[in-house]
Length: 372
Image 1: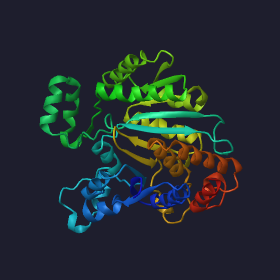
Image 2: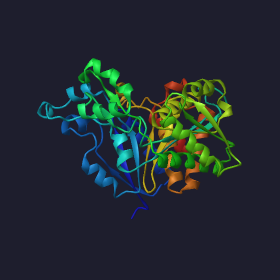
Image 3: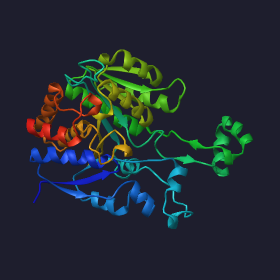
């Protein structure tokens, strides 16, 4: 009987390609796991009206962790158009399956390391080594949205905030609203995890990124909570920045930063920017981590035009496997994998098109496997 059960969720497009590369490396590591395939993605939306069927969630509850490839997502109207004719007109609304997984399993912490491995020609600077902690269940991606705005919702908000009334002149059927709802508890949770990580890995600062001068209530709550948490870590500096300025400073002075922490949308923005500093999304791994379960995924999209061509860089997925091994407390195996990845990057002999090479996804994975 295998030591671990891993939910295997390739998803859409190149998700299948990079997951195949992951198996090459995990098998070479002799990772003792049973991989259980799960249905998720655009085809299930089109044919079942649900990109994350209930059977997949039930299967995942019987596993130790999940490895996820990539997902195709489209705006509400486009998604509805692609439904099978038999499903159209039934009021089905597309909702991102990865966002739903984060909420379903309370995967409150999104961990995104961004490290410049020596020899990567795409690095902005050698030596960049930072980590973004993104709150994963609340904020702008919490999913509380309205279009049109129901009269009852408008009436309640307008009662307490007169600024809402200026939108009535357009007609509520012409107004859409997305909310940014944040709790003190989850702000404290994500900031605490960021400080714990900084302490464990020797980072000297934690930077909280928000926009409290404009988003006074939600941004203010995040920053005030960060200040409270920071008191428990006197050896680590707390820096406070606005999201717009932070994007500029990350490009200008990436070496100044160690651990950054932000709410959902701002964390999404700065982690993609940070990924570009170290080679782009082809090197961007992530873990969606809860108290008892985790889903690991590269942060790139499904790139449908490359699906099945084995063209894309698998390093993001292989580094994602490293995060999964870390979380499962397979530290030796995780370190062995990262060292092999670093060697292949440094040698620069086997590389995909984005790095100036012409090797396939699987050839890169096989080269990493050789280094093991």
